[in-house]
Amino acid sequence: MNERGHQGGSVIIVSLLVALLLTVVPLPAWAHAVRPEWTALILLYWALALPERVGVGVAWLTGFFQDALLGTLLGQHALAFALICYLVLRFHQRIRPVPPWQQALVVLGLLLIGQLVILWVNGLIGRPAPGWETGAALIIGAALWPMIFHTMRSVRRRFNVQ
Image (cartoon, rainbow, N blue to C red; front, side, top):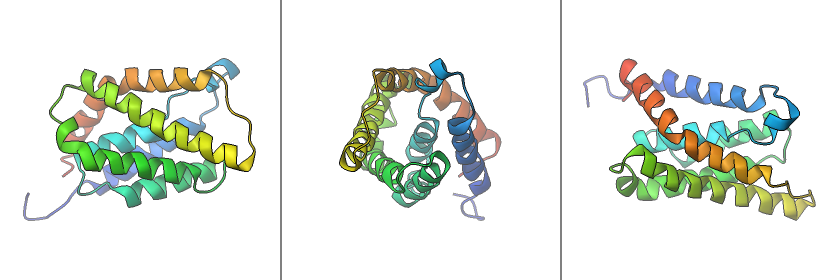
């Protein structure tokens, strides 16, 4: 680590804000249902790349903002993001060494866990379960993982985020 300590915190915040914006960008009806969970994907990247900086608290806060943006029950995305972030932090030393295309399988499992938490909360409050599109969104998110990984890694290197 350098003498200045951590740097690039603003890059992390901006990337999470961009992910939140991608979550609320208007899309056609057919594309809205299969939109990948951008915020979770970016959180997973940062938790994997910098586990000492992006943890459960950041995931909880980001999920809380997503709940506010989407108008969902406050805390449901926060709980889901905190759980998947905890799992990444717990197993990051096993996940990091494998290539991104193999990490995509782990990401698929993590996104599935997050979606199951959201479905559970929705079931508790009496909201109807979504259709098959939710599964398609998870698969699309996992398929995008190698591209997200390489893009975010180049951003991290360009702005020297440590």
